[in-house]
Image: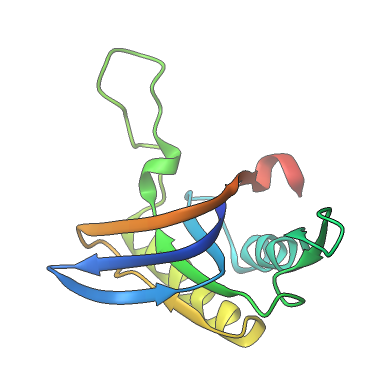
Length: 149
């Protein structure tokens, strides 16, 4: 499982011109799923996200978690996180999870986030989404379950 986590001052996702999710200060979380991912891996990844201290305290140091700043989270499925660009000029997506598994895990991640974060918003799985954000910092982290778990 791969997450791209961006600290944002605001973010939103639109599908067919309609806003499906919009947040203020918090995280934009792009989620990529592989065929070997499980609920247990998702739980560990979400736990890591919830505990990260990447918001600035009164001294300007990144010591605060999303909970401590009453932040929000926008979760967007992103199968292209598993793109393989080693050969040729057209990425291969064979490492991305099958659609059924990816959707089930994406919805599981959403349900877990709704239980952990003050406000959880989302995109639409498999849709053509337009994502806009103001990256705060910029501060972007790439979390790969193969490397951190």
